[in-house]
Image 1 (tube, helix red, strand yellow):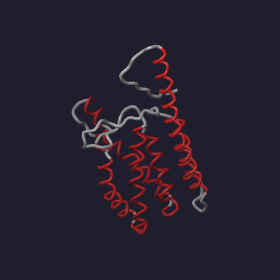
Image 2 (tube, one colour):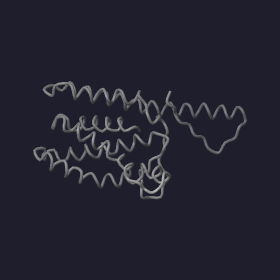
Image 3 (cartoon, one colour):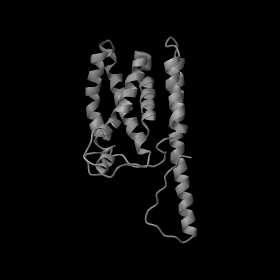
Image 4 (spheres, helix red, strand yellow):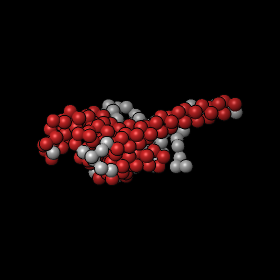
Length: 206
């Protein structure tokens, strides 16, 4: 998924997990963790093919991200030692920001190597286009609400949670839409007597 959406998702998750306890710091670090897996594009691997195929590789592995989570929390608590009592919630914030990034990429057609280094094919559910305003705008609206609304009330937190829920519902709708489209496509091929060994459906921009 596009970088802005990934940052927004991480920030929204961060606010949902820890916003009431540590304020906008949860938003900030959630956004940073939502961005980190995509920074592998800055590492040149020698040629364009390797650069493309290894993006969403080790940096998107659930094993790697789970191992990196405690280290990330250690760094965060070095910056914000006054929040050490919330160490467990920081763990959840970082881990969920990483995991939701990976799962969001799995919903695109490009494939994500979430089980690296195991020799398994990339996970590709192909239910969302790589840039989808219908998903991103509610998500970013919730994050914006947290930024502009006073922390003296919980309104920003509540709006963020609601927008995160709306985006999540859209995820499930996209899965249902894909199942329906594939069902219609298979029935159409059957009626025309056209055989096939595999069927790939993928969303477009519009």
